[in-house]
Image (cartoon, rainbow, N blue to C red):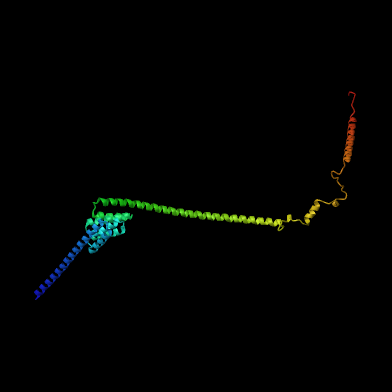
Length: 297
């Protein structure tokens, strides 16, 4: 009884394993069939693309991709079709799918190499460097990939220098703008101060002018410019009237009151008087010391 059970169990396990193998074999056959159909569509798409029928070729590539996830060629070739039409975004997506769809190093190398080319077109040089390095891990001896890697490094260095220079220029422009704004504010402040001084000067000038106008109009005139009783008294003291003169003071003759005859008589009288004085002087000289005629003993 136990042997029967054991035999039955073994047969059951064998049947299950056999069934699983059959399922796996069937799946593999279907996968191979799908891959073959996908490959056929890829071939047709290649022919249509060579005939410049992009629309039909694109449709067949998509059908081929949908039939098999193992067909890296369909993805890679569709990526090339997009790349040649400068649709770099779509091209990159298909190259990435191609690299993920295969374990073959040759196909992986091509996928990453072309991804590097897309990055170069977009001037994403840092990403291009990484893509070319990944391609060289699958095929280190590819001269084209090594050349592209060297070029990507050179372009990356140049880009970084330009970005650094641009940053320095932006910083300098910002600094210059701050200095310009500072100078402008300083000029405005100085101008405001000058205007205030000018306004103060004009205000003082207006005040002085107003004071001058008030003086001319007799308002707020200084006391020394006002005439009162005291000034009239001073004028009277400086110029006394004839009635104010002392009684014993003789009137002085005024010029041009003598006639010509009176002037002539006056001159003759003065000459006669002078003549008399001269004669007296001569007489005194004659009556001076006596002259001695006798010699002294």
